Image (cartoon, rainbow, N blue to C red; front, side, top):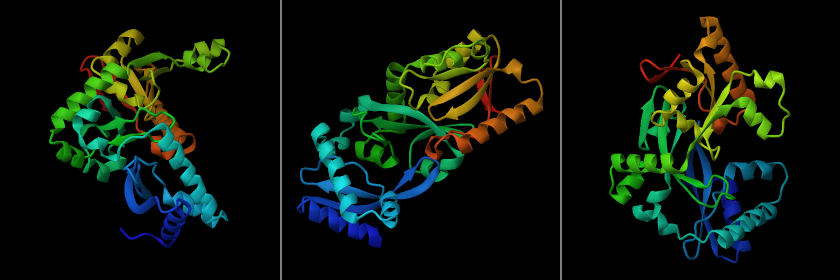
Length: 296
């Protein structure tokens, strides 16, 4: 694809200040809950995996007065740290056996990612979708994951069923459930427990890592176990792609109560959750009798 004027200038500056060892080319990638965004793909001799450069972010800073040389030096420093900490060959992703043990499940909005879902294997649940990703081990690196796409399955010569099976096996084994009262979580963050906090009816459902934990709602038997512990059917409030807030269904006595909860979720999504981490504006009901999760 054709580079913008700014991207051409930044690429030339990177090539010059790296002594010709670093090259870049523009591309588009999908971002959760958004249309595709522009990036620069960096490449260096030896095929080392490079950090992604979101060119629109750097262009904004350039338009606000920062110099190209300053921006280029910042990117080169990121490249230097990447090479020191994670010398991963670019072609490592070509062999399925090399990545098989690091593929996991996560949940995103299906309605807000319709174009993306045409390009990736997924499982649909109401207005949500389970997708699969490869997790890099270097937690210091932002967005250290690769979304599994249809083209990857073709490259590896495997089926959707195979990647689904492996992703769920890894997820259930290594991304274990964390379910507890919200008041306990607040206490873990150093907030002093009060009688009001203890009486808070909300529970937290996530994984022990606290990232992409909304997928735990689709682990076999998890919602049934939560409902048994709470002694009722459940209302699930999507806090983000990382966790759910659970409420006893007995707390929702009228349709108005449901609308109030939905309005609360939408307001929090607009004001307190980053766009790329929003899961849904809806609320959900888990029935013990049918063992099903449905949108209210």
